[in-house]
Length: 282
Image (cartoon, rainbow, N blue to C red; front, side, top):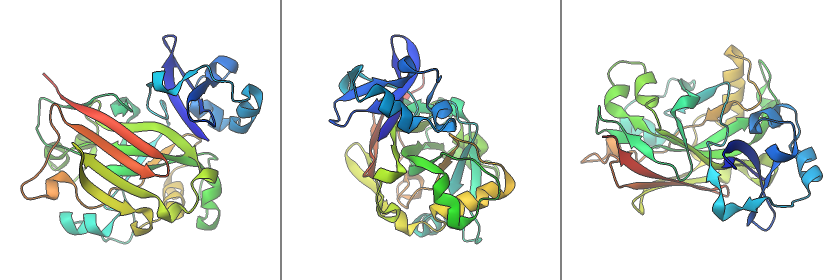
């Protein structure tokens, strides 16, 4: 199933794409749940499908998307998780995941604009696979970790490199308003197939900038859950953004950054494609 958050009749809601791929069921209108995170927390997704019976409330083509998880308790991001990205940056390789955090307020939906801030012209793209926690827990073992996953989505960890590099801490450059693209939906883990064969392709103005399969991650999905749950209890709806491949704009010669009028696409097979136009803040 493909689950998404969106606007309908001037309210934020959530639902799923029907089997024919053309309709969307508004589960917020048919249940007591405020959003997708709350439905995941209640382990209610299968029940909502059974209750609503794939009767669409609107066409997918008419959907105004919201970030897939509007209100996650935590967004944990993994840096330097592909060898090619370590090599192009000259960083990483410590043997444990490099982590930083994003805030939900910095997220932007599928088809909505990523904003290049007035403070810097170094807004870079980072296509990534987002892992959404279904069952929470603390000190989750690697062998059981994937049982805690609700599904996977697509993230563009838009990074203002100038601010990211001001100190050893990434936080400012990773949290400018409307720089974290998240969408268009979450595909449940049962429909993904071989997780290692998920393939990321990032295109800037139709030019391929990044391409890699998940099998090339330094720290795999289960290891990331094990590591993150060591220091914090994971909660349903938490998002772990699992790292970007090589090919980022800052590492190119000359550098390639996103600017007003650009369009950036992050495709993750078999999930779909996240599309964001870029607007320069004025």
